[in-house]
Length: 625
Image 1 (cartoon, rainbow, N blue to C red):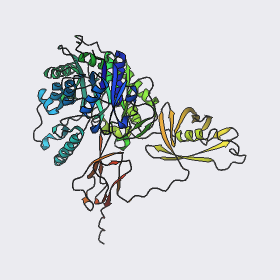
Image 2: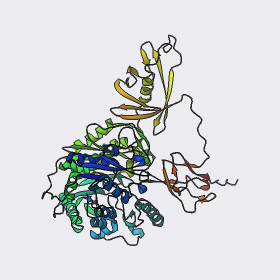
Image 3: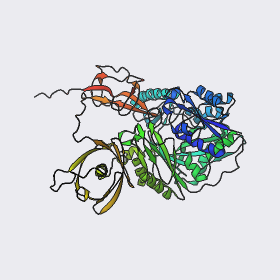
Image 4: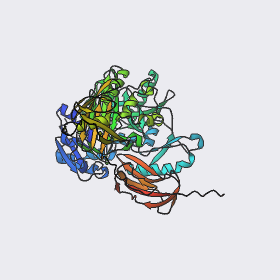
């Protein structure tokens, strides 16, 4: 019987596993990097072991250090979570060889499905041979790993060689394995998966279906169970193929078999030999604790012959610290407060947590359950809209709009959803009265002696900038005998934290919270983040024309081959690759010209706005008279 579990992971999934362990009376051990010394998973564990360093390759990806940590803390089992070492067969073997219990599938099963090319062979899928124009578009994929790393869509045959090289470099950096392959890119499809659970006694459960179609950069954003609108015979086929994957690998524990569904046909993608981020929607629909089942199976217990019946519908949204309007650029900073009312919230972040550049930018998962899909979707959208999220810019508004988009509510979405709608869904829509509410709350309580005047003079002014779009606002208000007033609205009441305004006959309340110069103004319809500005604009920092600045904090992973000062560059040519929070971003030449400065160096950490390079624009020849 397992008495103590080390979770070889961090953040949300570590906290999730701890919750089940506490319910079962099992002690918990965690590992942590220097960057995570004050993280929630460290606070929640019964014991914690430091892994010196910050970057994943020197901490959470060091299987030898993790095994030593388990032994030092007296753990008798290891749960890998997801990501990091969760699908590393060598790590699983090392755990077993150390005399510890591995809460996961056998190393041989992990190995069989670790390579997507090998997995396709086992599932009877023929690989794509030499690519021709007739095969386009195609998808370049890393054979190892996941999370969208090493993926490239190619629509022009001339770009294939370059995209293969880029995918190999990214895959080698992310997974230590540069193998890539090419498969047909199926457009207009849906990403559907089957959760399996298998024991060592020959029983394999298929726990319904999940739809994970809404993705950005090949990473899932919104998931639900069951997948809506699938024909019963297609569901039966998906289940049968998932069982086949379990049988051919002699699988044990939790796993997920993924498919792309298009035109009523299911195309096998891969098998994830671990627990998935989206597992809570399956738990909600089946009334199960999948982590508890993983532990029971690892202890040798048998599953019941049949799983419990599915009931109702569940939807999950991943809340990321990122700016969808800026190419999904990850954001950093202090997460002052995180509350999502009325739904299950799985998070690894406590109020006051620092969101850094080293790890995935997911802050939390919000999961809503209801008897019907319509009710679950509405419940989740409303909860996210009312959420209090004070800190870095997030994708919260995009999630709310996505859940309310007619293609999603009508279950007509496909994997191109964000290609079509991201710009509109990410567009800023701040409350027009939020800056005034912030100014009035700030003004409340100031001495009124000399504040109001019998003879009206100039009104008081304050300036704010809306985040993240950068729009600047100047608001004006007066101190009068009756209190604070402003043109165009009726001021009902003001305190330092709550302002009530009436505009066009509608009264609304604004909760105002300050964190230094950052102000969050919250209403039941959402949150507006503002930065207080000085009354007189500061002189803008001058940059040379053609300066290329880091759009996000991160690490320079590479620069274009042959790039040096004096080299001509073409419009749109990728020059520098940055990586932060599991996301790669290309910095491209804004137009044709000559590189006159190069400050980016592979391996160097940069902050947002750091100067990476300068491209002097090409001078067009004057037309002759």
